Length: 256
Image (tube, rainbow, N blue to C red; front, side, top):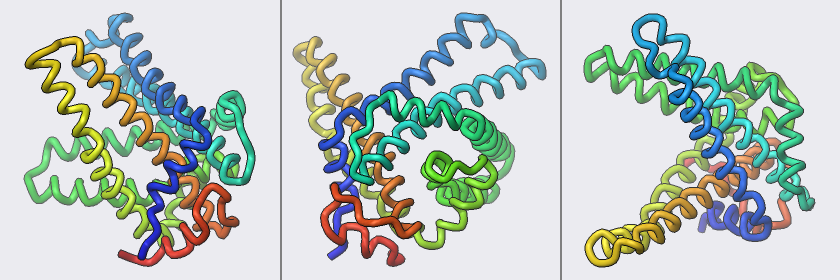
């Protein structure tokens, strides 16, 4: 039976609960960038002149999110090596890599914008091709963040390295996406029930439902970050992390 790698990632998160702060900071950075964008009046720029503005906003939002994902990856790597990193450790490690992080943010933003631009202007067959390319791009770059923060490579080399590791990790990538998805659907049910109760009978319960769902999304994001680092470690032949059950990753690379 295939070990439950997702549950193992949550085991690491439970043992190192401070890691959950990074998805919160990531979301906050994106919201702050959007707030500055709208308050400054840049959102009112339209036409051709607006394209560079929106591109800059998109890149800055991506940079903030990737920065904190890299900080999470740095701490996850330390945890899986037997250490007990602080939040400051992760932030400093990401700050040391701010140049490659920024260039990766620009590269990923450019690809994302181009794919969206093409998708809006092609017929159904073209849209399907764009979706397939987008999925392939996502899998190819799945390990960019761990590579970027652990191997000290630049953005382009990190993309190449992630693509090289794809051969050994495509199976777990597919499985993890599906299993994170159904776990979210399973655990979001109590939040939906609370929301329905709040909307129908007692409005204050809506706040409780919102807190529950936000907490769930945050925990899943943190577990995903830990999982990507663990997957990277095994793809590169690293030792078995102590927080993972014995053999939990040993059969992870069989195609599914």
